[in-house]
Amino acid sequence: MSKPAKAFSKLRGSTFEHPLPPYGYLYFDHLNAEFQSNPSQNMGTEIKEVVDDLLKKRQDYSLTWNHLYTFDLIISRLLPPERLAREVWNLRARFRDVAGLTLYEAYLASKPPDLASQTEEKALRSDIEYLLGEIYLRYAITPVNERARDRISSRIMASILGGVALILVVIILNFWFRDRTQSFSATLLPVMFIGAMGGLVSMQQRYQSVSREGDPIDNISQLTQNWSRLFLPAINGAIFAVLFYMIILGGLVQGDLFPKVQNLEDKTAGIKLNGLFEYGKPLSSVDYAKLIVWAFLAGFAERLVPDTLSRLITQKQGEKKTST
Image 1 (tube, helix red, strand yellow):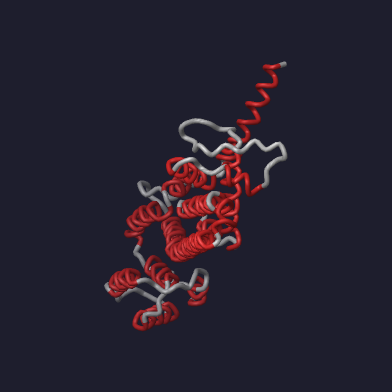
Image 2 (tube, rainbow, N blue to C red):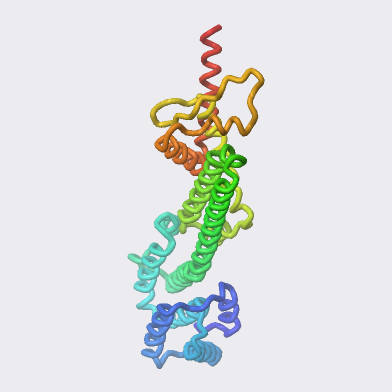
């Protein structure tokens, strides 16, 4: 029943080499106690060398999930036939908790060995090794997943802090050069900033809610995309916030939920861009608060502005058909 040591070495090199956390060492000691409780097990010399190497790594605190996986495989291959069914039952329960109900139901649909009937020993051992491989793959990938989430959160936080610093600089410049910057910065820049922050918060929530079920490698790849993509939601959020501000200034949406702004002066010669923001400021602090909320929603809800524009187009087309 023993396998060559080369086979175990191949298994040890197949997963991620990350340090084993403290609770992993507790589980290793549990496995070692089970292993030592059966000293009469007939092991080959090569298997014993692998076990001795694992115990040495335990003393040096240099174990990884891969080593734990190897030890668990060795013990499972030394199990007597009468314990196989109970081991399969235990591993299936662990697999359901680790992989999730969807993947567990897919596993059951593949018709694994029936524990209620007389199943061949070979089929049970094969099922044990499959379940161990799936369980330990997720044990090894979980730290990678969490580190990727932490990096994304740190980058988003750095971007938010950078945006806050930029706004503070603009406020200071506005205070020093009030006549030159007030009309431009008092409304437009806060709208752009809040929209960008809405986009970043939306992206962070999407990353935090990435499913842990399914293919673990694919889940990791979703979290480790090119870092430059981090700025796309912020850019889109700023653009959508400005567009929604233009919709409000144009009077295309109205109601108590939307902010009221100063009317633009009737100038037959037209108006410059800075005049647009000078005369299009919110009338009160309440209206300013509403504008900030809508700017955040425009960045946070990616479909808010496109859907609003689509409704306006549909409404306009309906009016044309009615008039004709």
